[in-house]
Structures are given as structure tokens and as C-alpha cells.
Image (cartoon, rainbow, N blue to C red; front, side, top):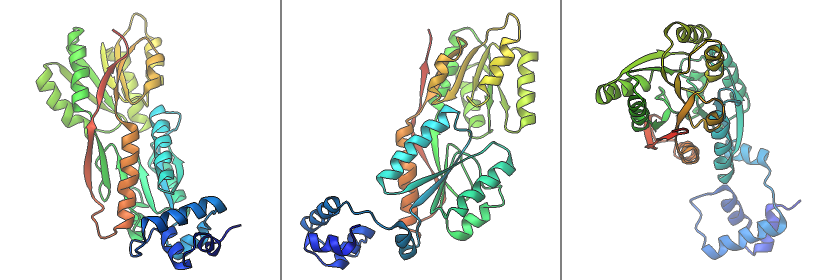
Length: 316
């Protein structure tokens, strides 16, 4: 197995220059030609760094944790794939923890990630209310939350208001004057939907589901109110479709999910969805988290808005 000394000998440089190159030290000055020679020697000798030795030396594991919901949800699965690709480009590994929406499940998943000595955390779920949140801060582990504002974290937000407005305009054009809106968290949807309701001129009825009890209450609402138009997250789509199938003479139109591309084939009732740039979201999430690790003096709170999402119609 090749060592740093072998690389230095092959490239004709000192051991210290090879060490600076491998650790990404910004204090070392070397020419582009020297960098090319070291890189060529690494590839020729098929050098693989000792990650344990590196972590002991740098204080980093080069691992990023990601906390997501059920990976069978295509949004989580697709985002996790993109994050994995982005992490690899920066020579980081990704440790994935899947959890249900219950607080104890999330707490257990977060504890698992911290036991694995992660350098930073990407999450699609709220962690600020969990017992382990204080331990994240104590260890100096930066947190980036996808989708929603999160205390003591950087938030990478989807700009979905325009796409939601287009979906509501579609419903209005189809003659619907009431749209039931089902989301797994009240923010940021409620504020945006209030604005859209005034602009579009139709009634938007907000319902939030998160816990098992809230989900069951929402599904019961389908049976009693029979809304003709539904705008929702994709996570409870299957139980919702089962309830609808059990009701005679009931065929609502549904705009379901964010980046839930597979849903277009699941049911004739699903007429459209909301599409964001998942690749860009993953890349920016990884880069922002690594920037926090490289510059611990920077603030680890605040938010960044991603480019506007699009409303995609699956059927005419």
C-alpha cells in the first residue's frame, strides 16, 4: 500500500508538501505544476488515505449525517441520492438515518448519527425540539435544515409560492372554489397560502398533519367533507387514496407532493405536482455545511431561498 513518502518520492517533492496537499491546507504555497505532479503520483500509485489517522490528526471524521423520513417516499430517496453524490465530490461520506415523524423516533435516529461522530448534519425533519439538539450545539456540529426554518440551524428554503399559486389558478380554471390544503407542518405553507388565497380569489382550507392522531383526523375529514380539489404533501397520499377509493361517486382532483415524480403514475386523480431543483438543493446544502466546518467563526444560523419551484401538470 502506497504511503505519503512514496507519493513524495514519485512526484519529486517533500513529504510536507504532500501532507499539505492531502489535507487541503491553505497555508501552503505551491505551484499548479507541483499540484499536478502530486495528483499524478496519487493516481499512479492508487493511494488511499488512512481515514482513521486523518480524523485523529484533523479532528474530523469526514462524515456528514442526514436525517430523513421514510426513504420509500420518493422525495426523500431522490434527495438522499443527490446529497450522496454532492458529498462524494467533496470527499465526504454520508451516514443516513431514517425515522418516522414521532419525536422519540427522531431522537433515537439523531443519537445514532452522533454516535457515528458526524462532522455536520443535514435534516429534512425538525431536530430543535429533541433532547439531542443541545448536544449538537455543545459539540459544535453545524445543522442545515431542508425546506423549513429551523432554530440554531441554517435553513435552505424552497421558493414554492409561485408554483402553489399556479396550482390554485389551475383549480380555479377547473371551476373549483374551495381547495383543501394538507401539509405536514404549518410553516411556511400557511403564510404563503394566505397570500395566494387573496390573489387567486378561492377559499383555501388549511389542515396540518404530523402525528398519527392528526393524520387520522385529516383522513376522516376526507370522508365527511369530500373536497373536490386537494393540494398536499405526498407523504400520506397512499392512505388518502385508499379512503377515496372506498367512497362511492367521489373523484377529487389532487396536486400532490414536492418532487414526487412517481406520483403522476399512481392515480388518475393526481393532476399535477410541485417540482424543485433537487440537484442544486443537495449541492448547496453540502457546500454550505462544509463552509461552516471550514470557517467556524461564521454564523450557523440564517436562511437561503432556492430558485422558484414549478407547477407541473401531469394531465390536461
